[in-house]
Image 1 (tube, helix red, strand yellow):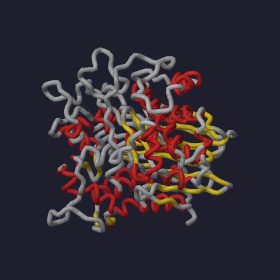
Image 2 (image 1 turned 90 degrees about the vertical axis):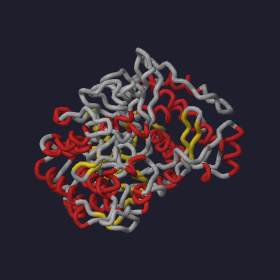
Image 3 (image 1 turned 90 degrees about the horizontal axis):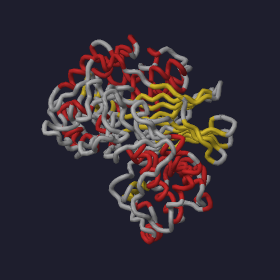
Image 4 (image 1 turned 60 degrees about the horizontal axis):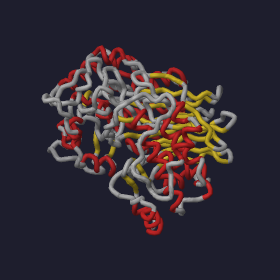
Length: 532
């Protein structure tokens, strides 16, 4: 298995050694991540799960995306004068929190794919929360960060010592409140999160100023995750399976289909033209993804139209010899009329992959949105600020954006946990990443290295990140050679450092009968075989 913190891998490994399934272990991993990596995910957020069942060969998607309260309006994130609240302020408001979905979606998936009892999955995290854990350098950077949540009252109080000084890397942090919450969930099941004291505490905290929200206990009690079939398409000798909207799996599939008709497979990581093709295909994908992907319960998402081979071929023709102006969305079959997208999605998220001894596998991306969510803490965990992932634009006119705010609606997610199968339906690999809107580009880059260039998975993960969207070409400029940067610049692609490079790619790939694990060196993750 591979996850974003060694203690999370330890917790999942302990569950596997007790006879648990991949999904059982994933629950334990998530509970530990909520303790040791609270800047990225936790039970106050949501998750999207892709599960492979070895006995049946079936892949199932579980979408646990947070939802807007029933009393939410399109003006949810506007001030009293009807102007959109600045994003940095909106993230800290009570209105930013959607109905937390992580507990519900993990419980639903574990009922279907678990072997152990639910109450057997919490012991390692409860013990660690009470004994304490050491602050890692990455967590310390977030504690001392410059983003708004770092100075939120709950964040500063939690990460301060008895003298009021901010904790540093290596300091011990205990969280007995979180341990108590997990004991309640272990004893009473997931329902204890959505009813009773925990639910009341969540609602009360979101109603507090500034800009208290509209969430009710009924919103929590009524929440249900979505279980559905994934979207699967061929990718050379494989089949790539991804979650449906409001996740961005369709965007990843479109990106790979655009590239599949080029000669990128005849090139390699040292070829500037390969990166040019990747950049231009990415821009086309993002133009379509941003325009059309939203919650399909509220807006028709033209999945089949976006992936239609004729449409893909027409869009691929936009790739020339130099970078074109920012592409606009196309008109795939079944596309609705929608306003332009104004979503601003930061990158605080985590990813895990677990494979058990029976060959069952899970690929899970989990989030509380931006770092430390809304910065508001309840019973030892932070609440998400996921509703800032909506497109809110008071001047949009009578036709809303696909990702516009609506009561009960789930915001679009860039999370795209993926599972790779062979053409006979057997498991081959799993991959995913945090990174906000950059997630499809991070995974796409890795798949190019793995599938087209036949690199070991770790080398594919290690490839420089390049996120091309609209007029921007963000990425790890210093990790491209001067020659490649110069050649890209001659093609109109000026790679800019400073944004779009904080991936956390984690994956596993079956090669010659053995699983190879990859953890992104840009974060603190680690991979381990269960027997070790």
